[in-house]
Length: 173
Image (tube, rainbow, N blue to C red; front, side):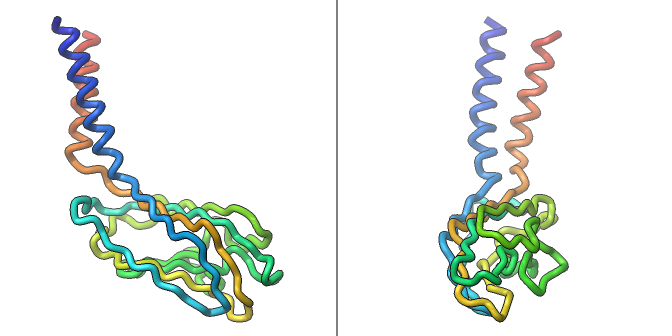
């Protein structure tokens, strides 16, 4: 009976912790962007007031199409996180280059910025500005752009993970 209660508690804690940890990742589908040289577009962002965890990193995935301009590179796209004062990529931004900086051919690209943001408040983020940062480009397309924000887990989720560990260690004795 006691073992059944411990297993039920572990199962319940795992289910609650799993649902709580789902909030530590936020996927933002931007879609397709076509920008001429030095052209920008800003996509507004509204933070969920029920999920205010600090952001510790991000990833960006996109498909690059250079069919309109053979001199365009995937890394010509610059992304500004408005309200955070942080930008990545672009032709002129060498402080925070893309993981695929200087990538030329058309294809699928991924940038891992996990750990780059050092716990920035999600409520300060107001939007994303995308700029074709190379002034001589014709219209260039970046498709299927997806930004994923990684947030610090809520203290309650961490406590539940700890309870599961304690219950498991108690059971082994």
